[in-house]
Image 1 (cartoon, rainbow, N blue to C red):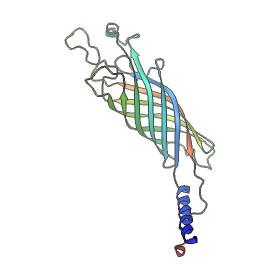
Image 2 (tube, one colour; image 1 turned 90 degrees about the vertical axis):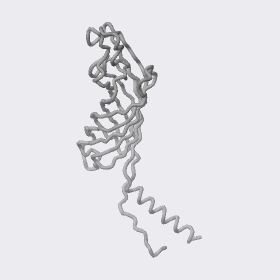
Image 3 (tube, one colour; image 1 turned 120 degrees about the vertical axis):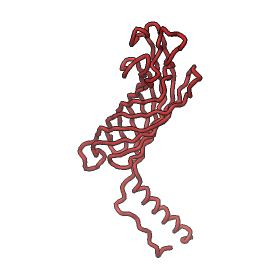
Image 4 (cartoon, rainbow, N blue to C red; image 1 turned 180 degrees about the vertical axis):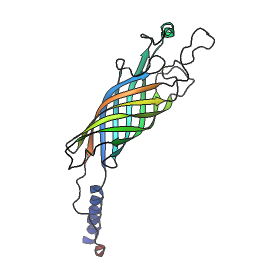
Amino acid sequence: MVKKILPIFISAFILYGHLCSAQKYEFGLGLGAVSYSGDLYRGYNIIDQSFGIQGIARVNTSQDVAWKVGFLYGGIKGDDNNPIDILGEQRQASFERKFLEVSTVFEYHFIDYKNDRSLIRWSPYLFAGAGVAKFFNTSNSDYNSIQPILPFGLGFKHLIGKQFTASIEFGARKTFFDELDEVSDGDVTNKNYQFGNPADDDWYYHFGISISWILYKIPCTYQYVPNKSMY
């Protein structure tokens, strides 16, 4: 019986030693607002926002660096109610659709806020990465509804105790097509109007607040070293 239990007992200690030295993983949820920029509106629109919800999985590889996988579901919309030029008054276009985004970003923290000896429990950070977005409710079949994106931006984190992180961040998403608002070249047979600028790709933006739970591992004071004579 002892010979059967001993290997299990030793394996459990080895696993415990591995977990104690493991990185910290985080899982969280965020809420925020999404806006659009393109042929109907230029720049960040702080007024015309849509709701967005985000799921987060993060790996803290060091005190300064983390990798985050994000799942963002939200809506974007735009119209010509406040046209950016005189042609927009004639166009009177509008759109509204949902999307699902999956991205991976690299986060860099400027302050070592997770150090137990640090009196500062917060840090600004930058992030950048890549992802894909699936756009729904599209009526134009000339382009793929799944598009690559480049997310980047900045944020602010605050460590709550040892097991929670609160974050606030603003990020831009660059797309590589001009059909997010389904306004681009327009009807080329109509020489009186230029319905959009096909050389200017559309963007969308996300402003969000999130809280994540850290799978905190208690540091091991002594690293377990198996006694080979026991085998």
